[in-house]
Image 1 (cartoon, rainbow, N blue to C red):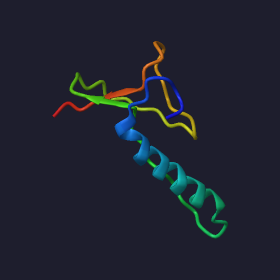
Image 2: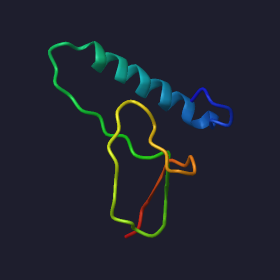
Image 3: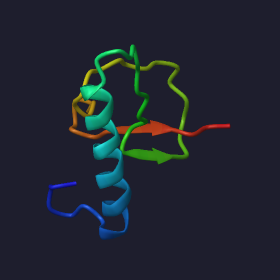
Length: 71
């Protein structure tokens, strides 16, 4: 959300999600996991693979963070 080009209409939600993450990180008595999809969700061909990460956005070899939403 701090990068140039981040859409203003997503800023409030991104800030709230960041605050929730901070609260979870500070909770010592809780075993938790957080699921966050790629930055770009768009129709496309299903490739049948996924990757796991930590607290950084996952990107492909071209620097894109995307996943298809094929039916």
